[in-house]
Length: 534
Image 1: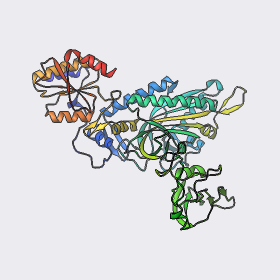
Image 2: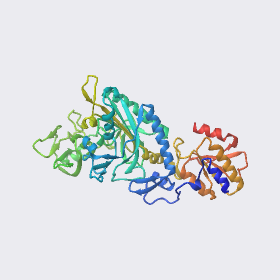
Image 3: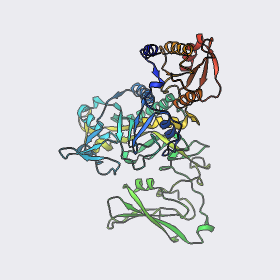
Image 4: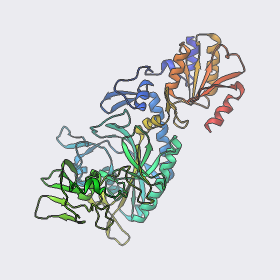
């Protein structure tokens, strides 16, 4: 036995008995999402703390394949791969104004010389620093740099295993342009590339939606969403015309005001918000049947705000449609035209209300739905936000200095691992798409201690491993245990060798996720696998 296995290991075989980590039946007590449960049970990940995980061999193999697909697509549109430091000097973020404007999710610390340092949650500042050094004239533009790198965000709501992490891997790309028109053309190209990426990794159902730019900045932003009941993002959808937007930016037609319910009571709602770092407050007057969307309000005010409380007061009648700022007061009052007769369509209307399923689509007036989703990517037209703040310019054709125009494009690699499991699983475990599966063929050798079974399993492995990634279950376990572990590993094709079929002319083959197995002649198995994977 030992001499046979020594020879087997020498031809690049992964023996399940030697695979580091364990597969378990027990459902982890602290896991609720199916991806979290299966990745723990299948020996893919191990928690080291809140939002911090070690990736074991199966997860690393999936991650590497996702990264390679991303690299191929980034390279195809002229991207050049770089690697930027995870630890950055605070002075770099001081130049952009983000060192202290970003909240506690940015982890700051001091080194041995008391210099302010940080763990990068994003790399705009670092890549602008590169542009400052090496892209000094118009002839150096346009270009796109990308990396697949570790990030750290001191996330207060780490959850769901790899869905929301504190330390995670991202692909982030940054393009630099001489004109807005060139940025827009490249942005459209990137939209198509992102769809290619999700299709290649096995998630063609990912959709692109309008989104808020948040702390990244910029005027135009889109997110890529995987609709999923376990997702934490809310997406407003019109099934009739295809309108899709994150709840943070979604617009709608609101229904006519229910005068019998609200007018007779003579009441209106005033929502009070505090402006971060100031004594100033913001008051929003809004219909009592509506809610304030905090993201919209922050964008309108231009500052981060936090909810204080709300009160219902006497009806003020037809409210002004203007945005009023008292320059002599610390308090800003936003008057929203929420005429008690319905929505105001004037140019002065300020939309800070939150869309819900009682509202209608602005495009086609059909009923709207709110669905849950997982964000698996985002892209932004940053413009000159970072180059201008950091005073980074290039020499234009007419010799004057100008600011480069930027785009930013991110994909959460580790989150994609969990998202794939959320979208592709059954009650037994993951069903990996063939493009990113940890191995391509799983051989179950039942009664491996039997000489005939063992020799046939090893012979099959040697034959298949010349072209495919193969894992062999060499453990002398009950059939139920072997098949349960095979389901947890989720490899697309399982081949079973037993005493009954070891010396016959066929192999028992089963696709992961299907109930029944079928027979394939031994002489045709290589062609069968070729056809499946190509």
